[in-house]
Amino acid sequence: MAVTRNKKNTLVAKLVELFATAKSTVGATYTGLSVADLQELRAAARNSDVVIKVAKNRLIRVALSENDKFKTADTSLLTGQLIYAFSSVDEVAPAQVLAKFAKSHPELKLVAGFDGSGASLDTAMVTAIAELPTKDQLRGQLVSVIAAPLTGFLGVANGAQRGFAQVLSQRSEAL
Image 1 (cartoon, rainbow, N blue to C red):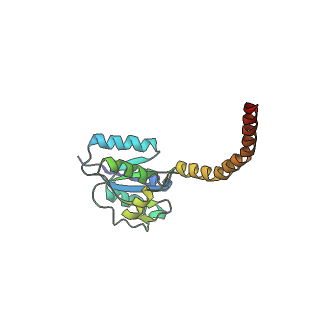
Image 2: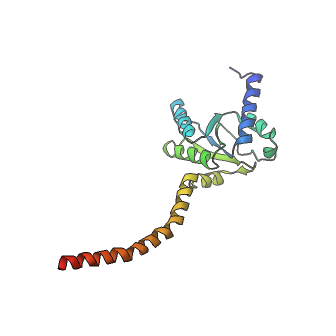
Image 3: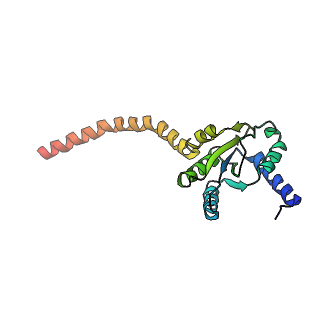
């Protein structure tokens, strides 16, 4: 059954909104995945604040052309059946969600993407982005780097007191 023009216009309007608010978008082939697999992917994406959409590439191109940032974006990689992941919260989340899902479902392959500024990303770039740490991981690394000198200083500062207490303890046992 063909999709009506009104439904297509509604979908394009939703896609334009998603592209306008997205910090990044990633497309991947999904041929061979079952409906249950796609539901599992959508659930994993929802947990990471990522929106999953399946749309014809022609409608994606129309949505991109309606947004000033994406008018010059290269859409040559958008071929075949693609599933798109959008995130307005985290730049690397769409690529990471799809890449993590692709590890257990080899039918899913990253194809292309777009960053928030409207630049096109090829497969190699999307794969590299998927391997980056998340914002929470980066924050944890930053805190540990900042805390390391303080932890070392406290260890040194307490070392003299601890040594003095051990000497007194051993001396009291000797008496």
